[in-house]
Structure formats: C-alpha cells, structure tokens
Image 1 (tube, one colour):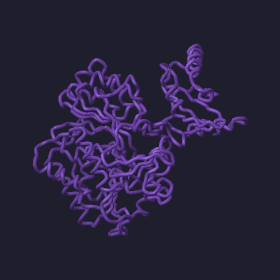
Image 2 (cartoon, rainbow, N blue to C red):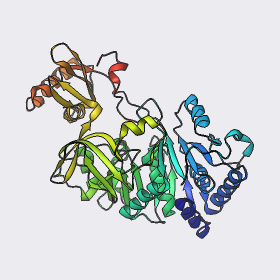
Image 3 (cartoon, rainbow, N blue to C red):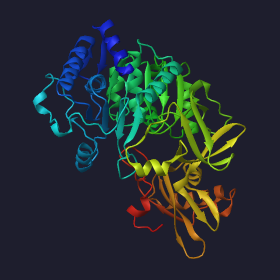
Image 4 (cartoon, rainbow, N blue to C red):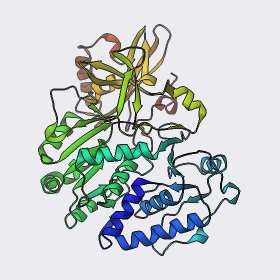
Length: 476
C-alpha cells in the first residue's frame, strides 16, 4: 500500500471542488483527478499489471498516472524522456515491465487501446517485497543506472521536507523540476502528501508567462536549481519584490550558489523559508542548509549544511578528509545493476564520489573523486580551480581537466567562456587578472594552458560535460 498515494486520495475526497493541478491552459479539480485515477487503477488491476513504466515528461497528467500506478502496481519504472528506445526496450524485457505509458495526455479520457500490455511478463516481478520507484535514468553517465527507491525511503524524505518547510494544503507550488530527476520527483511527492495545489511546468523556459500567471494565481512555494536564480533575477528585475511577497518557502537543488545570488535571495525573499539541499538520486537529500534571510555568510559556502534526520555520514578511510559515505532512512535500496552495487556500496554505505573534509563537526565539499588531477604528485581538485576562475567577473563558465605531460605526468588545462571573448584586449586583460589571482595559490593550481570557448558544454540536465576533453579532441 502506498501511503503517499492514499493520503492524496483522501485530500481529493475531502475537497473535490478544489483544483489540484494547473498548467497555462488546463486545470484539474478533485472530481476529475479521482475519476481518472480510479479508471487507470481499474485498468491496471483488471490486467494484473504489477510493473509499470512511465515516461517522465512533465505534464498535468503525470501525477495522475503516478498515483494510479502506486495504488494498483508494485514497481514503477520512471523513464527519462531522453532515454534511447533501445534502453527502454531492454528494460521492458529484462525487468518484466508489464505496461508502459508514453503519451500522458488524458484530455479526452483514458484510452486503453493506445497501450501495449506485455502479456508474457504478467505476474512476474524482478523485485520482491514492498513497492518501489525505479529511476531508470542515465544522469551524467551514458548508461541508465536503475536506482531502486523504496516507499519508506521517499516517504521519509518527503515527510521531512514537508515539516521543514511547513508545507500546507493551502499552498500553491511551482513544480518546474523534471519528474525523472530525484529533486523534482520528491517535490511532487511532498505536494501529494500535503494535498496542496501545483502548477506543472516543463522547466523555466516560459518564466515570463509563469510570472504573468502568478499575478492571478499567487505561488507560495518554489523549487529550482541554483542556475535558475540568474534566470529569475534577470527576468523579474524590479518585479522581484512583488513576486517574492507571497512566497512562503523555496527549496534549492544541490549545486553551489554564488555570493551575489545568496544576497539576492536574502534581500528579496526575506520572509520566505529558503533551504538548500545536498543530495543525489541515491539519497535524494542528505544535508540541508538554511538560505535567504537565515543564511550565514560567515560560513564557507562549501559547507553542506546539517544532516537530514535519520541520515548518517562518515569519511572513507580518513576521519578528516576523503570520500563521503552515507547511510540512513533516506538511502535508496540499491541498483538494478549488480556491478554498480559492488562498486558504489561499502559495507552498507553509499560511496558518493564526493571528496569532503570535516572541520569542527561540519562537512565541507571539496570536489569529486573522479575530477582529481595528479600533477607532479600533488592532487588538484578540478572544481576548486573552476570556482576560483568562475569568481572573476568576465567568466561565464569554466571546466578544468588534466592532459598528458611528459614531465609532470599531467598538466592542468582550462576551458573558459568569457563575455566578449572575441575581443583580444579583453582576453589579454583577463590573462593579467588570472595571473594576479593565482599568485596567491601554489603554482600547480594555475592552469598550464587556457583555451577560450563560446559556451561550456552541458549535459541535457544542465551539468558540466566532464568528458569535454574527449569532445574537443584532447587526451587525458
């Protein structure tokens, strides 16, 4: 039994005339949600469907399929809409997926004939016991990981967030994060648990229209990745205070936030409960830090925050600095791929791949284990060099990596995107500034080579493409 799905059904029964989901041109009230959920639930039970796959392109009907599947099925595979069809077909056969929902359009009702049921899989289950969500997404890797998350795990995290943000059934949240992403999916689960209304958007590409919509339907909750702050700042400008005045809570994803953005949050969202989390698909949230008016500018911004209730951590093989390991109620059940379970689990602890240090009981993020560069025996963290360079005003972005060097073994190469890079005077002035900045650091921190590019290559979910050297023809 799915506690979140049943809790949401109770909200629908108690307030059938309330509109729970909105887009620019559609909205669904309790009556409509109940009818659609019950129709899909009946279809799934009638056909003995225990394992469902949903293509997770944000839509007003996505929560309907999700709740119905939670009520009738055991395991739900959540497919990144960018997942190649070959990977989807492999998953259907290998993991006994009975049915897949690709077109999440219920505007004209639920059409059973448009669905393919894999009869050979009926009654079979790859997993056993309690129900699970399986995030079958590739993230920044080339191969889907198949992260298995139990009902207890995501219920624990969603409940913790609801309490932390004081989320209420009267709230109206902008859900713009993709539902195949652990961040966006957990925000949806929190809304289902609370029974608040939600505006479902496919990202913030239409933020001007979203802002216009908010003038007649005031948002009280927001969630976004840190890079979205710059988009919102640039589009709102003088309208920021008006937009922020109704916002009760904001949750921000796990990337770092610049000082300028933090000051902006503090200035405009002074009455909002703003939290910034550290986490990943396998643990959703592990640490939470207060932001906005509660932000402490005296603490290094690499501080992860306070551990989530029920989350334990330790540093691998070293009590002070090394790879961060996590364990607790928020942790996933494992991977579908046995090889990954062997590689990324250590005596029941998840190896995060993040290099952290502990100082005065606080955990600080240093970088990634796979982004360390060995230069003449010194281990350089690529992220640290990137943060130094990205702190300079003309820089739009930077990626650092090691390339072969006959003397030192590796040397540091930086790809840098700056404003007006085509102007040779700007480049010359920037090189002088760079030399001055790195004069304060050990010599091996300064990149041996710099290449100026127009834009930093990003993955489809907005992260730096760490195999940029391969794309650009460089050797490690």
